[in-house]
Amino acid sequence: MIGYNSSRSLLHIIVASLGLIVSAISQAVPPVATEIGASAFAFDLSQVSLTSGRFLDNQQRTLTYLKWVDVERLLYNFRANHKLSTNGATSNGGWDAPTFPFRTHAQGHFLTAWAQCYATLGDTTCRDRAAYFVAELAKCQANNAAAGFSAGYLSGFPESDFTALEARTLSNGNVPYYVIHKTMAGLLDVWKHIGDTKARDVLLSLAAWVNTRTSKLNYSQMQTLMGTEFGGMNEVLADIYHQTGNKTWLTAAQRFDHAAVFDPLASNQDQLNGLHANTQVPKWIGATREFKATGTARYRDIASNAWDITIKAHSYAIGGNSQAEHFHEPNGIASHLTNDTAEACNSYNMLKLTRELWTLNPSSTAYFDFYERTLINHLLGQQNPADSHGHITYFTPLNPGGRRGVGPAWGGGTWSTDYNSFWCCQGTGMETNTKLMDSIYGYDSSSLYVNLFTGSVLKWTQRSVTVTQTTTFPVSDTTTLKVTGTGDWAMNIRIPSWTSNVEISINGQEQSVSATPGSYARISRTWTSGDTVTVRLPMTLRTIAANDQTSVAAVAFGPVVLSGNYGSTTVSSMPTLSLTSIKRTSTSSLDFTATANGQSVKLGPFYDAQGFNYNVYWAIGS
Ligand SMILES: *[C@@H]1O[C@H](CO)[C@@H](O)[C@H](O)[C@H]1NC(C)=O
Ligand SMILES: *[C@@H]1O[C@H](CO)[C@@H](O)[C@H](O)[C@H]1NC(C)=O
Ligand SMILES: *[C@@H]1O[C@H](CO)[C@@H](O)[C@H](O)[C@H]1NC(C)=O
Image (cartoon, rainbow, N blue to C red; front, top):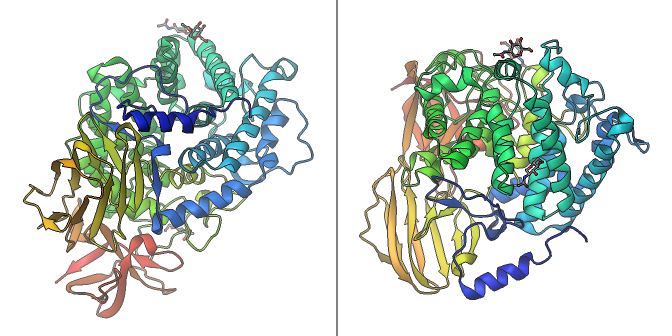
């Protein structure tokens, strides 16, 4: 089909046979601008695939939904708004209902998820759905004159919403740039990962519309406009700069630098209390993209201070943050254990930020310690494994006797549905579950980084090497990495801060390599095809105390937060857990028993706590 980079696999073969070392070569359309300040890199999605296990199961359920959903229904609001026929399609409910203020935010997530599905699996159904969708969006955009919109505009709601935004007369809850960000990010991913040139054209027209509109506003007007949630406008515009090398987009990105949030962070002050959490995190990701575009240290400081502050003073044991979608007082953890904790979008965005910051400072294991904690304990279990379409929960309740898929009605009060929710967290959940492999490995000029322990195959085409990781981690504490191919390079293995007495062997021979928890163990070697590295990361029981109340804690085994299974029993106050009573009951699963409030309770991985009332934070007794 026209518009696809059909030479992609051929390119792989040529690169593999020459053994060239070229970064980002595997992306269907490689970026033009080089990234300033990055000393390590992520692999392209096309280079890593999951093998069987808990992660692949999640991916499979999301893919089933992505390939099943009726694309005509997803086009309804775009076509209606741009005055084209809706072709008899049914309109959606929830946040994509024809009257919902920020309708069509979800479609950008679909575009990204389809693009990721194609990038990692070469799945042509996902590719064709993305290409069809983009072609239909192009028709909407082309009808702007008839619809009374300016050139380039593309949305499910009228352009006059932006006039109202600029005049500060917009109705509460309407977030037009938030939606435009999602649409742009989706189009960019379809261009980058599929090579669809129509996606590029629609994207650059929409970006030009943003540029024209915002270039007419002065600094104080822009700052005022940013008092409303606007997603990652600085992020996506900086990304378009990286992709095209055209500085117009960088200038436009910098217009979305939100001083009220950036200034305190630049001087490392925690002024997050009271702010809507997910409104902020995308701006910080944008700051890393702007640092990589400009080399201006202030951007890096804003992002890295924001990361430190959020991890240290605003994050629960499962890695999530926020209560009722907001940041609260620093260290307010035990004081905020309710049924609307840990909005999933925030964690999705924090993981994006973590990945960006790691590339600037790859010798620090703090980044992937957090990534592992949040991916395993929050996002993996956000999806309902009993649902073949992989529906998700918006919040992850941390109140005593909480239950996933339950929460305030405005956050769903249930699991997401096929056509009647389309919440923000449903969109980011589709992205998460189609890129579960994207951060397992990284590389620099001399090394491979093994950041996460997940069954997967890495095609390190730049070196003609394949690495096959086999593990049931975190159920097992051991992983093996088999290298196929040869060469001189180092394997840097993250040694998590939660472990001790690590064992590393190669081809069965124990190695005396330094493997201090909280560092990367480095194995420099001339690799022989078939070399197999075995890493054992012993796990023990530990507590993760609430910052604001040392007698309140979650319990973890290695990286895995454990929760109590209370079935359908109501738990009205925080149970007291006897720490000495905790016993593992199986060597092949993470099943434990314990005594809480004098009664026996089963403990298991929180990522598997769906369909029953659970408890995560306990009053700690001996
Ligand atoms: C920005 O534009 C507004 C609206 O035209 C105007 O009132 C204000 O004085 C301008 N601010 C500056 C600093 O130019
Ligand atoms: C950069 O993009 C702008 C906006 O679309 C365009 O006017 C300009 O010609 C582009 N510059 C280059 C060098 O391509
Ligand atoms: C969530 O908690 C609030 C406050 O305690 C309560 O009023 C509400 O009913 C709860 N919602 C659900 C769905 O459990």
